[in-house]
Length: 450
Ligand code: HEM
Image 1 (cartoon, rainbow, N blue to C red):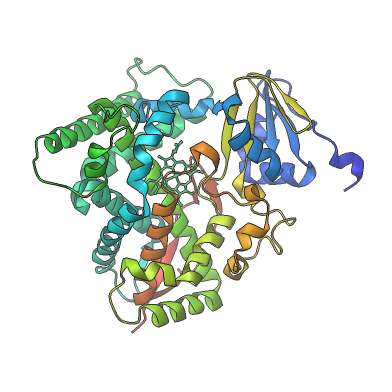
Image 2 (cartoon, rainbow, N blue to C red):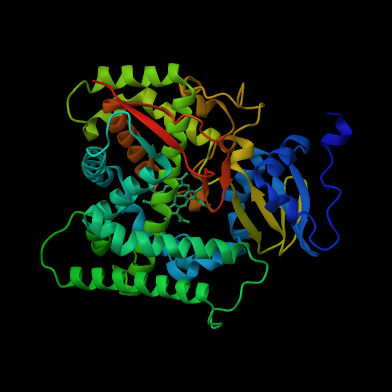
């Protein structure tokens, strides 16, 4: 690349009306990766006739946006649609509302609590995979979604699997499917128009609200002590004013954690299963570590810290297929980022998928190499070259929960099974919806180890 092309920022050839929106929508991963390779720090594109969008590919500039100058930005507009169900929860709220809620909720995700949730993660997984059979084929995308749905229902509400799926999982799935359609549509029909899709959309929101409200109500009237996430959140008090959450706030946060907390981890696990099937040598090393650390004993939370290779497998899988493949922000106050002047109303996109495949920071960037994470590798590269959980005040609140969950679920599965792609499997391609998932699922054949 010539020095001149390195200093380019404006991306040519946008369409006069839609700008680069169609290129982005058609294949966001390829488009964003191309921009991060061809443009040094920032690429300036356009969505629609007027909206300037900067695609940022320099870790120091990403740090400025997420951390040092974060007050000049807000979350991107397309997330607003989620407010229909998560209201003013952590994911969608801004400024003081977000700050207070974050202060209140953060302690519920401390290591001491997560270690307790870990028992439920293991029990839910072990019970679920009990029904898996030798030489049978399973759609791992569905299976992982079921397992993480079971885990979040149990850790959050002490609900068993069937209850969690029918009461929350199903309406949430319907809601998400229709919400994505609304997000992607240029002008979604207002909800008062009585179309079939609108009715279903409203019905799913209504069901979710009813279920969560009744869970909160029952719990408020229950004298017993619960150690699940809801129990911890009910006890949470703001250290400044001593106040807890109202029922409405609690409902928004429960819905947020439920929504943010199961599909992401399910996809991380599904991609991990895929990468291991494609790399049998690494799968063998995983089995060796499980045999050495756990043997034939039941998996326990204490094993987590000794499963360092398993942890590296998850980190490497989050590098290659980050479930949150981009983070968007909107400029709310003019700001200088490096040598670039961003104006109010501009948008920025920072893509984990593109950054994690940058050969400046990762050698053989497209190769699955868990070993690269040995010896504190992440500390040797710029902080925002690897950021599967985002960063700054809005960093994923469930990052330790997700790591613990992914490692323990994988350990439970790998202790009992090996797996490979089903015969004549379609070519596996990532599908970037709200999270990154394998398009058309992932069919795997299991083989019992002993
Ligand atoms: C591998 C799994 C996961 C990944 C890759 C992931 C990724 C992310 C990312 C990138 C963000 C920041 C988004 C932004 O800055 O715009 C985020 C936020 C969030 N995540 Fe996660 N997440 C995962 C699992 C979880 C889990 C298990 C939970 C809860 C149990 C959770 C709850 C949340 C919440 C509540 C937020 C909003 C935080 C805030 O703005 O204060 N996530 N997640």
